[in-house]
Image 1 (cartoon, helix red, strand yellow):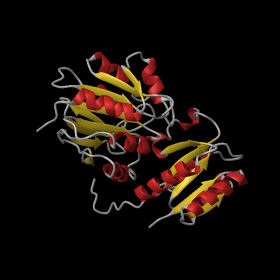
Image 2 (cartoon, one colour):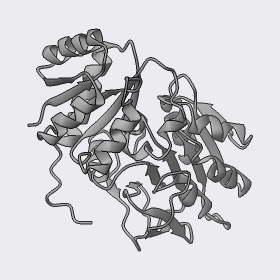
Image 3 (tube, rainbow over the protein chains, first blue to last red):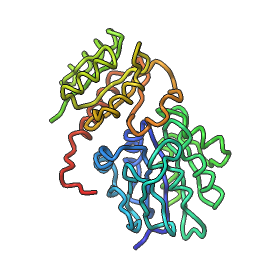
Amino acid sequence: MSARNLVVIGVSTGGPLTLKALFKEIPPLDAAFLIVLHITPQMDYRIAQGLATAATMPVTLAEDGEYLKHGHIYMAPGGFHLKLEGNHRVVLYEGARVNYVQPAADVAMLSVSRPLKGKLVGIVLTGMGRDGADGIKHIHDIGGVTIAQDQHSSTIYGMPKAAALTGAVDYVLPPKKIAAKLIELLT
Amino acid sequence: MNKKIMIVDDNEYVRASVDIICESGRLELTSAASGMECLEHLEQGFRGVILMDIMMPEMDGWDTIREMVGRGLYEGNIVVMLTGMGEPDSKMDGLQEYVSDYMTKPFNPDELLDSLEYYLTLLNTPVDDHER
């Protein structure tokens, strides 16, 4: 069954350890989690496997054409952009870099559209640059809840700061409190 | 199991402190005093976790990563930047996918060791059965 609730996360440098810290605090929830981490094709599978050792939900690399299921964590593979069709079907494609990166969080976040059948949450975590800022504004504009990692806990406070500067971020939190907020929103 | 770490830093005191930390965790350390030395070790077959200083004379950390990628020496490594600066500058643009972490000196030995062990676990994950 396809997921109704969707959480899209953009993250870069410092991401492997931050994602581990976040997901070890989250019990299985009624949502699909889509992570866009700036990563190479050589490392994507290893990082997904590393996250799987800490997470309570299964973690896999998203595959082209696949439908997102609830209670599952998907990671965008390296070397492709990922967008969603109908908010729950994965489309992978090679294209120009966006914000210097591929995959880019903005591409995934901007592909989410109304009508939303369930809850939508957009999160920007640690990383250099401003990827995810346009995406988080879009998610906010279409009725989603938006969260940015706080400065103190960020390895690099670039992406979360750019997201916060859009004025479209509802909560600025460290990973542990992001986990608590997700539990509150999705249970 | 691969337990190899490389410290790339022109400051011998930083290299020595990483040596002590790696010894306490029974990790195998290779030292490089410059970006060129790092590339030489990679050409000789080093694969592991690389702790890369940013500000080095002649070839800085960003240029060293660009050389690694350009010469096909990146694959099989995880790169963690070590820096005395708070936040990276725009020289990192385009390299985000190649930098897994960013640590500010002076670093906490326990945190550094925990991070190194986690990144080694990732590098040692078998990928033979994974088909794209």
